[in-house]
Amino acid sequence: MIWQTARFAIDLGQPRIMGIVNATPDSFSDGGRHATTAAALRHGESLLAQGAHILDIGGESTRPGSPAVPLDEELARVLPVVREAMRLGVPVSVDTYKPEVMQQALDLGADIVNDIWALRQPGAAAVVARHPACGVCLMHMHRDPQTMQVAPMEGDCVPQVLSFLEHAAQHLRALGIEKARIVLDAGIGFGKSVEQNFALLARQRELLALGYPLLAGWSRKSSLGAVTGLEVAERLLPSVAAALLAVERGARVVRVHDVRETAQALSVWQAMRQQDDRDKHSDNNKENPA
Image 1 (cartoon, helix red, strand yellow):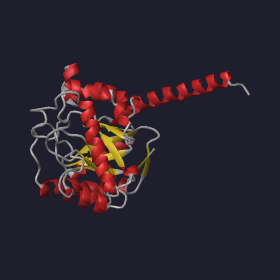
Image 2 (cartoon, rainbow, N blue to C red; image 1 turned 135 degrees about the vertical axis):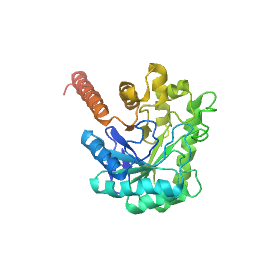
Image 3 (cartoon, rainbow, N blue to C red; image 1 turned 45 degrees about the vertical axis):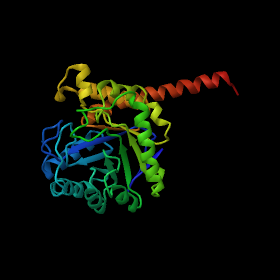
């Protein structure tokens, strides 16, 4: 399974780690510690050293209730970081819903557009469709960041999310965007209750029926705090556990803050998978001797 992006064909035969670089002063997770270009770039380099395969650069917080950031301000935050990150030799993703930010980041050579609005903002889909090869991640979000947790989804969210993502992907395909460029994200925490978020995890394999790779973003989310009683800064272990459970249920990309610990956990998971494969091969040879 390949995720085709502007400069890279990312092999999703094994899980990939997308490291989060928040070039924002009001991120829920890191409190603006990487708000300057230099600090954001240092953080990105650190994430790569810890085992990240992709860097996801964002200039607007999307935590529940967060205000929208003016276009000029987001451009000023994001573009200098993207420009420098392009030199690091890894896929660079831009976390934005604004078509103007997408266009200018792609003009700099960014590889992926990661959009919480699934390209529903006017002009966004056209920007991606005009680009010859950039990757795109389409996420489900109920309502918008300002209101999504005021009135979360109702009822069984899994078929609703599945239907939304199916139509979003079909829309892009109709614009001529190749299937290999598209990854889907169920949008954990974006307008869902705690129970609904865990339903999406438990039944994540149902989303695989759409035929696209899945990205899972559980890192430090409030649902993890709800079931553990831990504050944001204390959610390392729950975040790693959620990432592993998502990969076990078929996610090919995990978007995380804590790269080193996630990479270590995935190494154990992969070793176990390899042993399972060896055991199955051995059993097959015993059942079907030459």
